[in-house]
Length: 343
Ligand code: PLP
Image 1: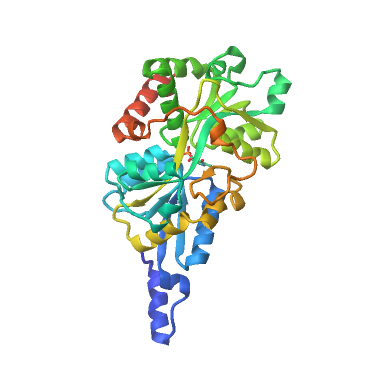
Image 2: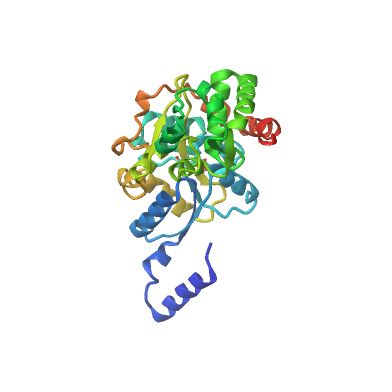
């Protein structure tokens, strides 16, 4: 959207017979971003520098961004949505809140990233992948004499009473991936029975998916249910954090990117999309943001000490089914009724 100030700058430049500043000349991009703030800032700054396009970035969790895009459906304010778990991107595509795009750079991607694009009717492309697991504070658990969790079955043990933190699926895509993972591992009724049994061991349902692992790092909680790459980020920052992946198997995300339907700056959105798939942009997650997801670009290396997904027991996550808007809504509503409302 052109701001009054921007328009005035162009008019003044015209009167003076000079070109407007390059950033203004290239226009503006409204970027919705659902990865950690450090990474969001890095892509906003680097893309602005590389393209001359002025970036307005808003960072929110995946579920919150989906809710915002829905609310703005008749009057879209965002142009492109970078990152966050894949399921809400698929739901947005199905609800016709995003638009198809075929980037020439898609040929540089891993198959799993392209599969997401194909399954979504070319509306959402994979930009990274990461697995769910348990993060824990090694010092806190050692001090309390608590053995770290290795299996989903361990988490419901009395030794973890009040020690575990996870996010709320209404705002967090991570939390929804965890619910969908449990449903796929156990069957739906069993998974909800498990989550109710787990409830006394949960000290808080955080707003953002990365809140619980940050609480682990700060020593506010012993254990988090998180993406395991985020545990390595905290360890690299010097905190006493380690992770395990569940012995029964675990789910994973294909962090995604979509262009919003009705985007006012669609050309800028496409330029950003093409740029975000390139190797240098894909390296920024680690190099500027300290993030350890598996990059979607085949030439972007797995960051040092990042979890290697080929070494983790992953379920065959059914992205098509669990990314469906109605299924997502139904499972979150059931969670609200049966788990989130428990005292
Ligand atoms: N930050 C990182 C590093 C992630 O990998 C993801 C998942 O895509 C998110 C944030 C998403 O956060 P939330 O669970 O709050 O939607």
